[in-house]
Image (cartoon, rainbow, N blue to C red; front, top):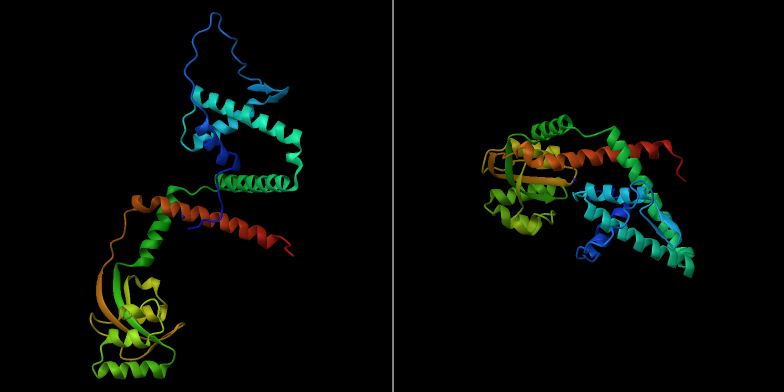
Length: 279
């Protein structure tokens, strides 16, 4: 659903999948004469130069990968452990060299922190206010009803004044072809090169005054008086009419759900902005 204005992927995940993919694969180690002690299932996953890497950090990475469809496994957890060890070494080096204290690094950390918190608020809001199947079907039926059962292929000539439109009608009655006048005089740059052709559309896609006049026309006929809309004055010709081929719910379910999710997010943000003092 649209550029969507909020990213739902938490920032640690953006680097996690890539970094894991870059880890070299190793051949299985040959059994040692004496089996090494297994790490604790509850304590830190590793200690690097005296700094412990908490198991909860690895669990977060694994959950994020699972959300992307990666199956939890010993292999994945082993890769995550190696990644976190590498990251800890790099952070320690950044601290040692002073890089971590640089202004641009701190600014990126602050920005990432804000985005993670904002995304967490959005995720919690959606958990509390989910978009269900009933919501999707209600929106589907609403969209289907507003679309109607017929679509129209029309062409038009848009001019600035009623007198100009009357002049167009006079030329048409004299036998001048509709598409020729449209190409020379129409102000609609989108349809002008195509002789005013607007392609197939449902009435709801047009200005109401335009749509009301269009649906009253018989196929092959044109309006006998200028039609005024918020864009100017139109002379409209109806070329064809056909039944609408509306997609089945399963075909558009994901798009509808995404649009409804976006609407919930936008409504939440609008509410927060309305309550806030923004200077």
